[in-house]
Length: 404
Image (cartoon, rainbow, N blue to C red; front, side, top):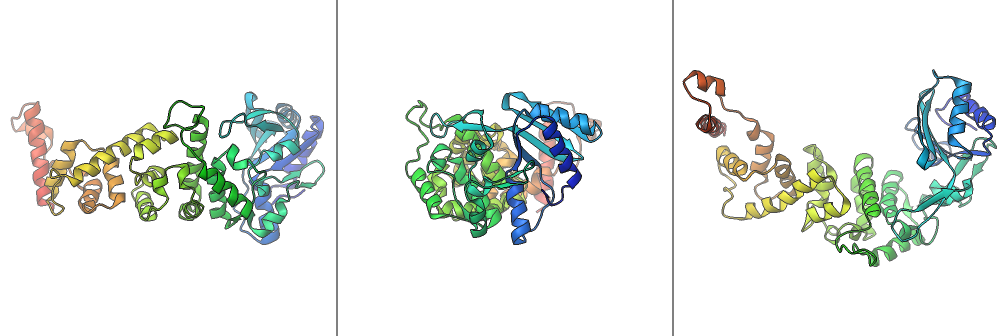
């Protein structure tokens, strides 16, 4: 067995340790198998040695202990055991390895977390999302294991779910599908698209066995958010979101996002302003804070989006300055309302008529300080207290007026 970028000596040591630990089967699984085949057979660029995921029929900790005994602490480092999950993580010669006990899973209710129990390599592969991710390279036999014809779908550039209830069991697989479609340039098979359509058609955020009407099962909400975080962190997000829109799958988050014409420009602005991209996407929803709450988005981001709705209403009111008002007028008005800077920045991303003064406040005006410090004023005879603070504000606004 050869793996691009991985020393053959490392694989030989791992194989010997598996035999010594009485492991029946040890197979590399996941993206390393898929990407390795894409590189070797179809000339796809190789991005370097990834973390290597291994599934074994045996005891992961016993394998790690045998590897440590054979190779020593200088080569085997950062060993961590997660006993409750039957997994072990370590580094061998600097290469990250994750060992997981083969398992099987079942879903007691659609979209809930699965029930997981020990199983075989074959049952472990059935747990995967797509056929192209359900291949394994057996280190002991050297065999490429492909029970679901993943190689054919790899050659065809096709995303095919493993079974008919795959999306119903876990709707986050729709987000995963758009991630792979964007990254690999693959398309959904007709069967896969039919599954997505069927799931979205009957999709509720309120599930009949839950009492709270604005919540999905918490496990599902967390998985959706995690998949979206990965989408924005590592994928070509514009292409991925185009896929979701094409599949009419935005209802998994909020139907109002389905025909969102300003989406890409808004998210690109967020990227430019170094803002988190997920809340920037959700900002166009009628109640973005509610969507963020359903997804379990961090509380600070929820507060930004909650303020964003109030800021939008304020900009439409007579209390907001004219778009051409001076820097000191805009600064005084914005800061008197107590808007958080990030809220103002997200409003810039939405491009209201007043976006230019909002952007200038975010980028420059809010950072400008009084030309004289509190120490300077005290030296001139001012006393500490509210009057001193008001004078510092007045001097700052005067400087802003001159900066136009």
